[in-house]
Amino acid sequence: MSDIVTKLTLDGLRETFQSAGYRIETLTDPVANVQYLRSATSGLAFDIRPGNRFAGEEQSFADVTLVAPLQVQGDLPLDLVNRWNATRRFGRLQLSHPFLVFCLDICVAGGVAPNNLRAQIEIWDRLVQELIGYLREELSKLGAAMAAAAPTAQPSGNAEEPAHQRAKLEASPTIQ
Image (tube, rainbow, N blue to C red; front, side):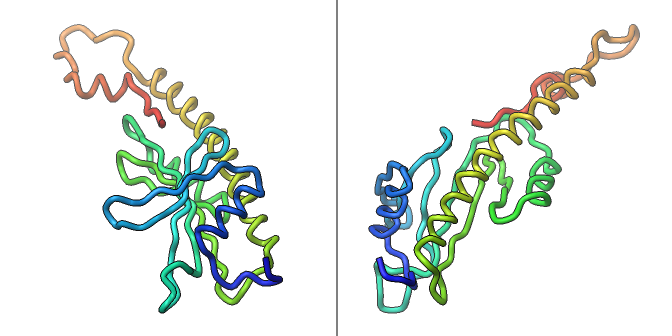
């Protein structure tokens, strides 16, 4: 590798991630017909998606996005997502039901040192670990709060609560 990285390629990213200990596979997006890489860390699969391509260079690009989509079952409060985004730098969460998407952008525009790419991968790995812990803790709190708010007995004389309302109170959200 040269002293300064001014463009990215899938082959170069594959080597960089593999040298950091990741298994990498190459896939093709069936809709966009674009190749990308897939890997995993801490049990969470993620994609390495090419960004802005250089004019006249089909295989080179200036940036890449690391994307980890998670499927949400149930209602996930937007406040949980906003708290993460307000307290963390670099990576961001987006809620687009039924998915919670975790992303981190890496840009080499203007040139960066090779160890900068390695540092970005380490930041990603750390953020994924923090995200998993954060979601476990917050979903546990949410489940406990929902259980405490659930009615234990119906007062006499009231009509029964609609089934969809009971289901909302009884089922805390899960993320896969």
